[in-house]
Image 1 (tube, rainbow, N blue to C red):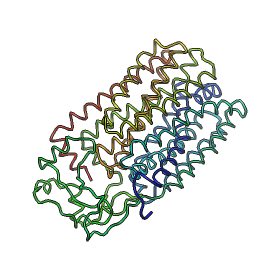
Image 2: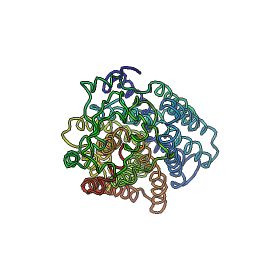
Image 3: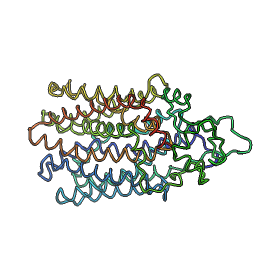
Image 4: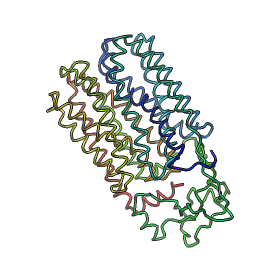
Length: 490
């Protein structure tokens, strides 16, 4: 796509396409609580066994996500990967039409949907990250906000389909609707930066880049001034080879560090080629785990795993919990719709606020996780219709921040070049936690007879995740952590 630029034009079409995809993918996932009740009543099974569907879906997701972003992204474009994911997910839901027991659903609604979602979700977030810079938080909020719209629309749609076609007919029709994600994949044109004449030096828009720079981390600038990290002057318009870049000779300690950038320079490999749907050349491992040497990255992985379980399962388990409180089907459907509506407002507000630079993105995450986690601890006192509705509004407003800011925070900490690697590992960690989470919460329900213990555990996950995010700033001040960050940066 010659001549394309960030933050305008086709970039917003990509955002719209990802929003439509999330409308179906995330909307259906967050409405799984309604299917949860129908599966239990139709197949006469326990909460633990029904929750195993979510666990299997998460397990397949965590296995497929890093393979997709680390391995298949080298051979196929993100558009092709998303096509495959849409077809796989749609087929899995449609195959559930002939399910005879829960074991069959573990494969169709569990494994196949998990693999399909992994091949759609990760590449779509990377595409948004490539197409946006200044408006990244807003664009990501709009894209992820499609899931909130789906959560708003799916509950009443599911109940209408249940009444008209039953559970099996509903699954078949939902499988057909998921094919709309193929249209979203078709819009994912590879992103390429405009070329410029390297002999003429930098363009007007080109800015000095650092090999280790966080856009919202002023402390990194202070360390750079102390000559701990190199400044590489290059053109962001793909016209220069690394071996042509003039690196200041006053950084002799960089040679001793043997960073990936210096290794690439030795081989003469051009890592500043057009930014398309390929990982950088000179990667030797099938799945690059070099970021795991960075202690900040490790803390973020643990925090994201806990936060993902908490934010997702709060929405899913509010439906069966409200049914235990005596709410009818229409009321439980309304609760999910309220969460979806509040989620839209929360994500858009969070994205706009993050782009202003008034508050750092990771701080917004910390605040939202503390609010959601604290409120979950008071679920024992929320039994009336009014209090449950207020609870849904708050978790909708606060819970959406995590999903809308995850990719921008990864970019802030590790850079856009590391986004496929960092996001792939993050999705894997989230999938591992989501494999255990639903089964554990289902077991607590079967053991205690209520979902209160499950909500307390979810709230604890969110509070611990917020503490780990706070700890990342203290870890980043460590010189040893900064050296590790330099070694793992592009």
